[in-house]
Image (cartoon, rainbow, N blue to C red):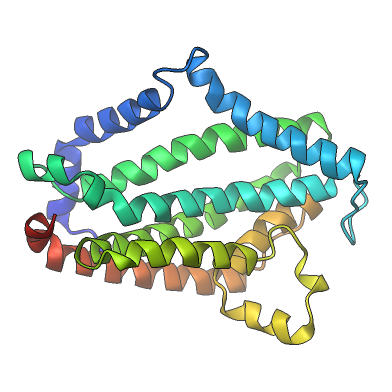
Length: 266
């Protein structure tokens, strides 16, 4: 998917990529009195809200789970990982447009831009998910060795997000309606994925349609590991991995074919 020439270009500009990721993180909290501390406080507040509201106030119970924190963990497992997916796609769709001035003025491998987007999103996710893991350990809900199953699922999810981000990022340069459409589509996609509700409560005819949603096996895999401590359905994850590779391949092909024309359109 990525040619040896692109890899050499990425390695040669690794300082530019890592510097851009660092600048993005610093600029996010540059004018805040508490600075980077907000990167910890914001997700911590979200986890506490879910825990207090659903576990203590509403006493919400997840079917098939005994822990009082089960629904809070179910929510965080879905929302945090969806957040990573949504951030890569959302930032990817505008990465070439937002960096138009840099692209026109500086000569560098354009493939650096999606890499910067993915690394920046992963840094944000690592902070948020790290706090979530501390919460799991503190409440006695850490799944133990089964947690290792999260890593290949996360890799497939990131590949799926990269494939989509590359495609919509290139298309958005030539057709600006793409960005608006993707923003709306992502909202529908979120609610059509069992993140805040279990799929078991859906009518049979609606539940059957979830088989066409590639995010369902991924989100359910996180929930299986983190809530129930059980292994993901690797067969379904394998099918999503195949789709992710196809999207990445198509996205890279589209990018290589249109990279030269993008400068004129920006």
